[in-house]
Length: 164
Ligand code: FES
Image (cartoon, rainbow, N blue to C red; front, side, top):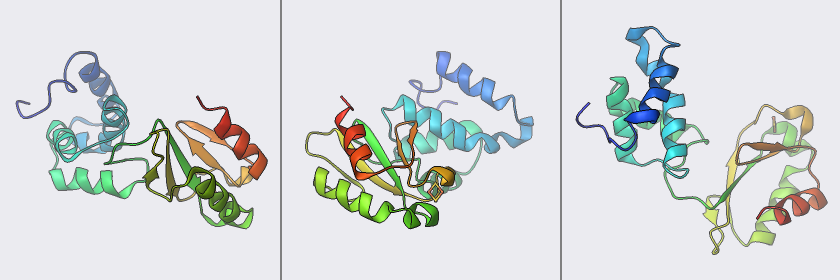
């Protein structure tokens, strides 16, 4: 435990992690890696880094490389500082067939950024993600923790302009 960052793995935060771990057998702590990484990312203003990923691995008693592989595989994890709003555009098949390419091009033009970039005012970061499991509402975008479905150029413009 001594190597683990006390800021995260102490007090209420540690209790939250321990509560989550109760869902798994004692010898399967690593099964909680995704959720614990999510907890840490949220606590660290929306992004992870190598040290924090290593701390999670140490906490769960798993090789650091395994936690790093998880953190770099899933698009919900970020190793760079993001804008205030993370806009995740689904570009998988249902969304693509329903016009996500045109929406993405529109938003890139509007914000003046590409995928994995942040606007100069630090407000928006644009990300490309695979299926968000909301295909019935394609095309779909996830902003923060909220889904927006059946998007059009007009609706995405309105959504973006309503974000403070
Ligand atoms: S393909 Fe976009 S939500 Fe499934």
